[in-house]
Image 1: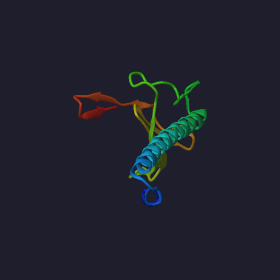
Image 2: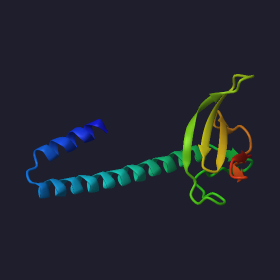
Image 3: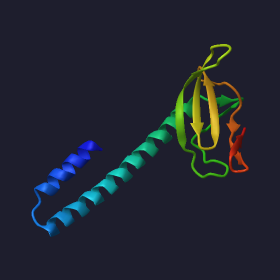
Length: 128
């Protein structure tokens, strides 16, 4: 962000005339919007790919858990956070995958427990 401000200031400092400065400022704003959109698209594609890779190893009974499938009520599933945790009592390491509608706990490429779908009740609390 700091570099962007420095570059913008330098470009505007070396641009002569108010009309040219306005045009350059508008062009910079348009470029920022395009870059922001591209970054968001890339981030979404990376998240979908990560969910696909995770899904390849997750089995429930005879079927595979497809994390790339659309949600029941929220449209496309979105990866919110992924990381490792350890259970307090046993110290067992689990991988946690939090999406916009489910929380998945994974132990050594096996599903730790059945998928817990998150549903909103009374606008403030979440129940599994």
